[in-house]
Length: 132
Image (tube, rainbow, N blue to C red):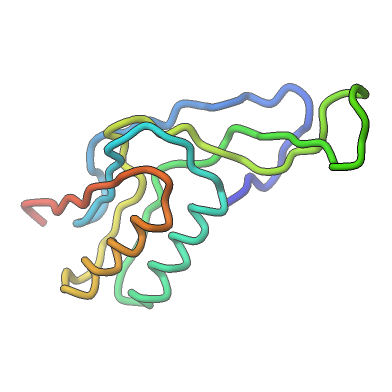
């Protein structure tokens, strides 16, 4: 879930994407703690969900990784500027919705969301909308 185009200089870091209310789906995954999510974690969650629900549902990922993290190569010496962009991260606030899901509710889906919790570095809770 990396950004398609970016410039190395003058990047707007950490744009706020805080949302604590459900907009789209029946199920939502909400963070209970503060933390950092990487683009690899979000991609692993997306793949895990899409493999299990197949074409029976829709997924909306409500956060984006917009904060670039740089790292220099192992053999380089000190100085000579900032290293290359290694990955993008997102600062997750407590209570923000990470993703929403529109799929038929079943026991397998709830087990799937427990599997999703193991792939993320923040504690999550699953909420079901009371009306459709």
